[in-house]
Image (cartoon, rainbow, N blue to C red; front, top):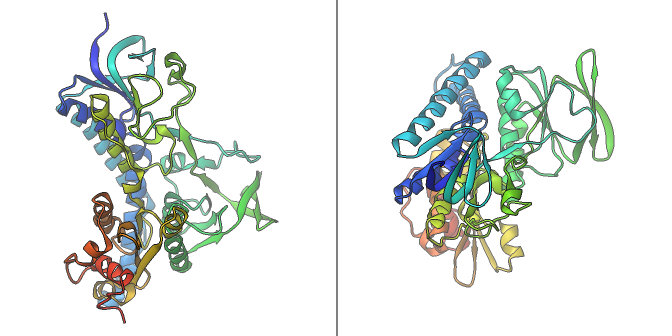
Length: 455
């Protein structure tokens, strides 16, 4: 007879690891199934590699500005080979560390491809295990574009591009998600001629529109071209590389590139065995429970964008607790959206547009960071801190930041949203000075008509 568990989690990414560890903490005999990539997509092929690239970009920008601070001989020249070598070292270290962490925490690792094999049953290879509850955390897979020529060598997803470890002379980036813009800035800093094809008019579509507009203005200083209302018509091959036909605002143009990089993904459910539990799709309710008894799902597998590692982690903890008897609801509203661009962008809660669509009488407060002491010290002219609230009760609905360290500062906003703070409470917070974070309190005061430092 195969071994039985209280909880089996399929997928060793951030959501799966969090769910498995939380299961053990709650006293459940827990197993975690993973075939190859401990740490999941984020650690191995996304978050760690791309944030190393973002850190490299930050160093480049810092060195370029160093002359103003007395470093007259500073030179910003990137060695791509060294960056990709460090990427491999970091990924290997963290992946190995994740597998070790799982064991230390008391989780039973099951190595292999996991799939559902009926209610309360999970197959790993030829072995079928029993479980009182199952959590699916299988992540997402790449989607090949539908335009003619998408199968040509040189049209690659972001993971394949990172694995190649080369900086193309000419690169087409498809999309304006945080990940795409981060990649475009890094490649530009490394000397690639970068074109970004944006289906939309703006960039960072998941963010407040003002943040996207201000970031796009800041990107004009970078060596890249953003084409709005742009789609790929076809990709062919010529003597120089790839011949790409782009439709730009309805007019077709020919462009030459060495690589076309894509970023679209979808849940990896084809071999999961949903039919064995009577399901065709993996929909979940607010408690992350699927429509089959004893089954929960978290992270990218649920199919709700944006796909974020910290979102999956939060979901994993809640799903484990609910699978073992709790009744906690997951609120996507408290999950920050972040972009490690230069300057960084971060957002949590409702945008101004979303708040208006929800029927709130909206209050907004905005502080341009360029006039704040720390921004001046950092040489950061571009940026803004914006808060969104509602007039009737003064509840804080959203926080939106474009600034250095925005991905760190947004944690304060995320906690405020989760605690259902008011604009008044944020306005009265004693933020440290001189910091960029003090603009959070001033933005709340601006929304309430109580500004102190704004003219």
